[in-house]
Image: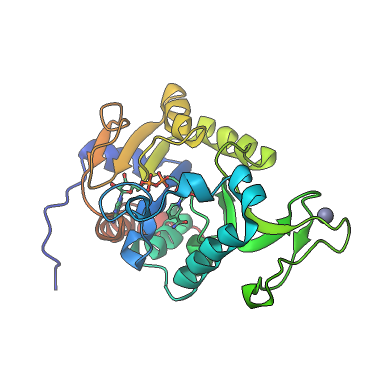
Length: 258
Ligand code: NAD
Ligand code: ZN
């Protein structure tokens, strides 16, 4: 049965994809919206109920680490209870069609990895991991707040914190370097489910386009990137991406790499 939909891809995009060697996807919270994880901005965003800027920061952690951990444990639980959606799975399938395929994600939810994507560049860390606030060493294990005490680093005694990038912090150097490198080389660049307002991730599509990439945005709402994109698909990612995989199967099926 053919699914009913108004979603259409232009001939230009199909032609670009048919011969592309290098494809890069930048994802934001919107790709996980269909899994039930609220976005920060946009309607229904977490933003409306909490102010992440007051919780996801070094200052907040220094002021009140228990409160920050309470919020992160709540978000962790939320994420543990959900599954990747058709958008994540379609990106796993897309990997098979291009010799070079990278996902650069601003998400910390681990859903691309859980779905099975291999080349994932995490710009903002991963909410499922912990590290030491002082020396940065990874720390395995749950943070149980019933004990009323946040664990300390066995190496240096620093407080354990989530391994995510907070407001005002630098991004992991290697991740941003790699993200810039693959964006520069991209022939087709997809910006999916991101409000395109958080730097330096927001600059990556410009870097790609400046170096010749065909720029495609997938987002039901308009963003600052919309007017710059060569093509905008204003639909949810979990509806667009499975159709894109069907299109790829048609145009590249026989050339599929193993
Ligand atoms: P954002 O919340 O700023 O923007 C989300 C965007 O997704 C909006 O433009 C919205 O229109 C769009 N969107 C909503 N539903 C969609 C759908 N079904 N398909 C496609 N697009 C959809 O998110 P962001 O740009 O990723 O911004 C930033 C910060 O929020 C990041 O630092 C990230 O770490 C953090 N964050 C992560 C998660 C997560 O890991 N799932 C969730 C919330 C926030
Ligand atoms: Zn330490």
